[in-house]
Amino acid sequence: MPAFIEAQNLQKTYRVGKVDVPALRGVSFEVQQGDFVTIVGPSGSGKSTLFYLLGGLTQATNGRLVIDGDDLSKLSDSERTQLRKKKIGFVFQKFNLLPTLDARSNIDIAQEIAGTKADPAHFDRVCGLLGLDKRMDHKPSEMSGGEQQRVALARALINRPALILADEPTGNLDSKNSVTVLQMLRQANVEFGQTVMMITHNPEAAAYGNRIIHMRDGEIVAPELDPQWTGHHPA
Image 1: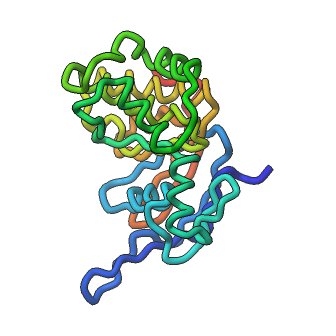
Image 2: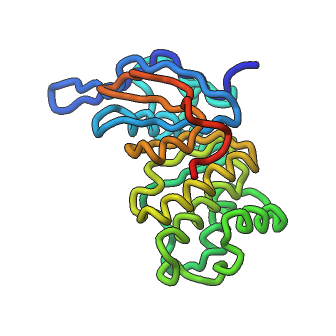
């Protein structure tokens, strides 16, 4: 079967004044449907640029990127917007919740933006999986950081996107809440079968994936299966 994500010689160069600054220098990899892939690298390694390309937020300078059969290099801006609405769920380091809305409304708004029909059974299943059942009426200011990030994760999952992109999802959390969020992200990956790609600089967080891609200076230096991964999240 064709790969769910296929990247071929991805290059991205930014123009800074009169100087071309390469951010990606020919990145190639494949990801199968249902994988949980973590992308690890220091600041400036190109992992954030790769995240923007995968999310259709910017276009590669050269190369080819296909996600679930869609060649992003051939899509217009409006078509990439529709791709993001229908196929991609985002989880960021900052929770990006609307402070005046309660948890339920912060999740519902993702369906309104995507124009998808509400599915109460799926809503309850997602929120139950993430342990949010009793927090639906609470606003962000009334929740812990871990709870806010779980609401953000529910918002990313609610439209059943084929791909979840997580950018340092535990960056603003303490160690206990970080473990909780990572365990739930892994559980959601297994439960719903959605492909997950997570950017992190934290080796402990990276171990929650079933595959780790190491980046440095805009290149992949070590794509590999985690030899310690057994199909379960770390203890």
